[in-house]
Length: 408
Image (cartoon, rainbow, N blue to C red):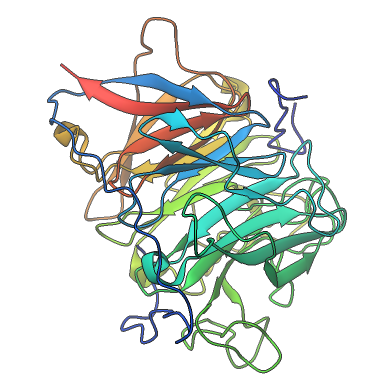
C-alpha cells in the first residue's frame, strides 16, 4: 500500500475552537412540523479500570466509515461507504436505511471514495437537519438533508448541496465533519490526491483542498447557501473565505475534545510519517500544518523549507513500523468507564494497534501503545468516534462496529 495513503477496501460488501457567542441556533421555519422524539440516552453502570477491549455490537454492509449520534439521542448512526446511513437502536440494526445517497448526481464509491462523513446539527432535535460528505467522479460534496417529519428513522430523500469542491483524483478526500462549540460546521478536505501534492493545493490559500474549512450553516453569504464566520483567516481577503486551517495532506479522521475544544487531527502521511496534530482553541484559526513543505517534521520535496508559521505535529508514526494511514480518534468523555476520562484513542488502517494519547498543559502529547486483548485488535479500522453520551465506537472497512470498553 501506500503513496496514495488510506485505501479503503471493502472486504464485506464487494466542541471546538474559533468564534464564541454563536447567535443563531438553526431554528426551523415557523411552519416546520415539530421533531419526533428520539430514543433517550441509554444509561450505564460505571465500570472501573483501564484494561481496554472492544466489543462487537453489530455489522453493516458497504464498509463502516463512521459511527456517531445526534445530540441527546440514544441511537447510533453508521455511515456506509457505499452510500447509506444505518441506525442501531439498543444495539439492533434497523432494516431500512436512514438515508441512501447512491442516487445523488455523480455519486461514486470504492477505493477512497464514497459516503465518508456525517454531522448532525446541534439543534437537530428541533430542526432535524444533518450534513453528509460524499464524493463524485470529479468533486467532493457537502450536502444538507432533513429527517422525515413523520418517522425519526428515515430522512427525506432530497438534499441540498452546500459545497461542491472540484477534485482531480480519486484519493485523499478527507471527509470528516463536526460542529464546534461555536455552532459552525468544520470540514476536512484532502490535497486532491495522486501523490506528492502535485498541484500544491495544500499551501494554496485560494484552493479548498488540503484544508480544514469552517462555514456557518445557519446563514447565507451572497450567492453561497452558507455564511462565512468573521473569524476565518481569509473571511474578507487573501484567500478562500471558507478556509480555517491549511497545509494538510489527508485529514481522514479528526475530532474536537468536547470538554476543552482542543482539535485532534490524524493527517495521513506520504511515505515516511503519519502525524498527530493537537491544537488548542487559540492555536486553530489560520494554523498551517506544513504539508507539502513538510511531511511530519521532515522537509519534503523540492521546497525550500521554512518552519516559520508552521504547526509541527506532536507525535508521528513511521511507515517502517507498518503505520500507513493514521486514524485520528477522539478523547473519551463518557461516563461508563470513568478511568478513561480525558484519554485520546487513535489507530491506523494498516497497523493492528490501538494507542492512547494525552495532552498536558504545556502542549506536550504523551502516547502509549495498548496491549492487545485476546484475539487482537480489529483489522482495517476506519474510525474511532463518540456517540451522544461520549462513549467511543470503532468501525472497520469490513463493516464491523465495536464499542471501546474498559475494565479491571
